[in-house]
Length: 413
Image (cartoon, rainbow, N blue to C red; front, side, top):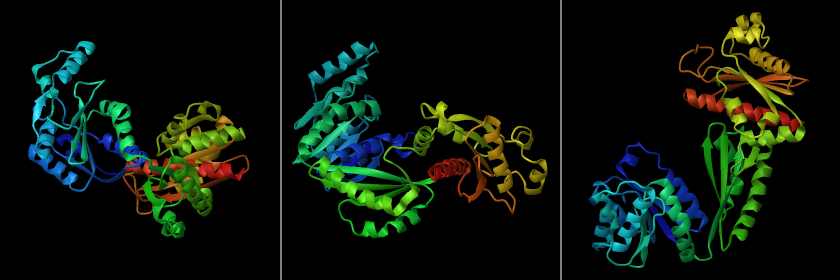
C-alpha cells in the first residue's frame, strides 16, 4: 500500500512546534508494511489543504492527516477534506454525545464552538472515537482510496493509532512486513562507513541500507520487506553480520542502544570503575553516564575543572606545563586523566579539554580543538580532535568521542 502523510498547521511551517508525529507515524507505518513515499506540511488554509490532499490522492492509496480537527476557526481540516472529495459535512448526534461525555468526564467547560467537531463527512466515513480529547478522528473511503484524519495532539493521535488506526491498516495491508535493524558506529565518518561497506550496499535490492549521521555517531539502517516479520529479520541478520564483520570494533551497538549503555555494561561485567575530569564539556559526559540507571556501581564521580587553578590544586596538573603548553594540550589532558583517576581511586580516568567557541581561539588553537585523555593503572595517553560546528555541537562531538575512547580502552581488556 502506497501511503502519504499530510500534516496541517501553520505552527509546523513556522517551526513553532516540532513535528514529532512525523517520526512516530513513519516508523510505525513501515513496521506495518506500508510503503511511505511522501510527507508534506500545509498551513491552515482551506484551498491549500484541499490542493495538498487532492495531490496526495493522485499518487497514493492512503493519506494520513494529522492536525486541524479542533474547535477553533482555524481548524479547517474537516472542511478541506470535504471540499477535496466533493462531499458535505453533516452533523452527527452520536459524535456530539461523545464530545459531551468527554467534557462531563473531565469537568472542563464545554463551549458552543466544540459542536463543530461533531460534523463528519456525509458518506463513506467511519468515526474514530477520541478517548483522551474532544476531536474525533475520521476514516474516509474515496474511490477505492482512503483518508485517515486524526488530531495533531500527539497523545491523542497515538491513542487512536494504537486502538483503531494501526489495526485497520494491518488488516488492509495483509501479509507484508517491513522491518529494520540499526547498527551504530563510532570513530568513523559517514563517508568512511559508506566506503567500507560499499560492496555490500551495491549487491542489495532487498534488504536496503541507508545512513544517518549525528555528532560522533553513524547509524547504518538495514531494512527488509517480506511476507512476515521472521522472514524479514532473517534477511536483515544475514546482512547485519556482513556489515559488522566489515566495520569491526567501530560498531558499538544496535537499535536503541546508546554508547553510554554499552560502556556501562562493559564496566559492570569487567568490575571496573571510571571517573571524569571535564573542562570544555562542562559535565556533559558525566551527565550522559549517569543517565543510565545503576551507574553508581561503576561511575565514581567527576570534576568540572574549568579553571587552571582547579586543574593544578585538585588534579595535580603541573603549573609549568600549563604555562608551557596551555590548558588545551595533550600534556594537560593526560595529567587531568591521571589526576582524577588517582583522586578517586578509579580504574580509569577520562579527561576533556578544548575550545568549544565561539571565543577563546587563537591561530594555533582554533575553535573545535579538543584533547581527550585516558588513564589507567599502566598508561596515560591522549588524542587530538578537530571538531566542526557550534558550541553545543562541539561539546556533543567531544562527549561522544570521549565515551568511544573509553569503550575502545575497555575492549583491550
